[in-house]
Image 1 (cartoon, rainbow, N blue to C red):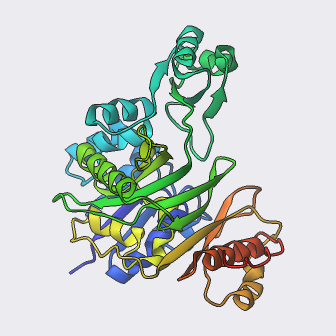
Image 2: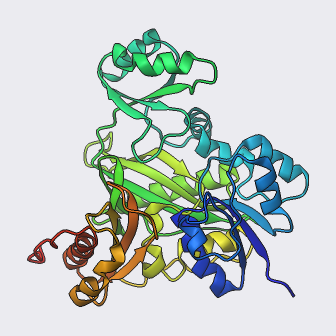
Image 3: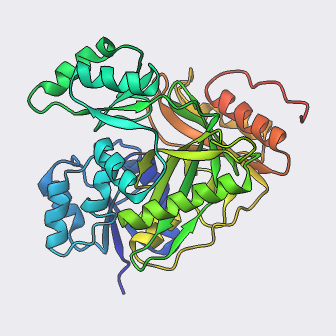
Length: 395
């Protein structure tokens, strides 16, 4: 019997990290990469070069595949609908994926599902924004409905004229619509990763805390420390409800704000911030910290295989991103990293160094959170070409 083929659109680090899981399962991974030097192209043998919007390239990629899936959401929906009509198992399908492509569509559907969201409104004029600012207390987050990520396409405004340039661009032919959301007074950011397969089975990893710096995830702490039971249950319930309500197949990341309860003394509650229908930065800890990684689980889900155990392997796992470096080659740091912390797990993405670019991540697991976190940050600092931070006192 030939190995099932999973076709993946996008050649970045997420596709790269699917490769070990595919190899272990005996799955043939075929990845549409942006260039022969793309992150995934360095480790995947079957890696045709093409653009995600190239109809011929995506059609050829999907030929003979057991499933077509994605490592980013920037694929034309009409193309996916045509492929599905021709019998390709598109997972997640176009009807689900649109909610990760268009924030207005996402907010409309989440509201209909009863998922807790910040107050929001589509914005088409300065008057619309002024009215929304008055409703939410004078501060709002304006977002482009499509194309934003890692803090891009997001702007905090305090007056309606502060978005005039974006409103003008949105009004142009082909312009991207805007929405405004209330500026939530959150205490921290959380994330839940769930996986769902076509038969309906859903599994969720523990709720994690995501530490953002300059709009980019810098650390993930698994599980989220000090999380109230009621808050954890709400977060997992919301993620499962969204996965089922949108008909997601594969891994779904639900990014959340933790906010104070409306009732004094009650547990904090959560509001949905963003969705991603693919493996996600907040789940990289699962490679070393859970029985089944998000990458293996995504492959299982899109092939409609029984889902794997999501139990953590250790009390704590901390993931630290490597965002930029002063080193020309991060592999030059490996001797120092191995000497500093033999227990740290380093994952490099094979990318050219640019300021702020996600170049890799470090996972450290253990029983003491302060120690685990300090170790992960120290190794990430060495990879960035910095001196590691001094160890903490364990508090």
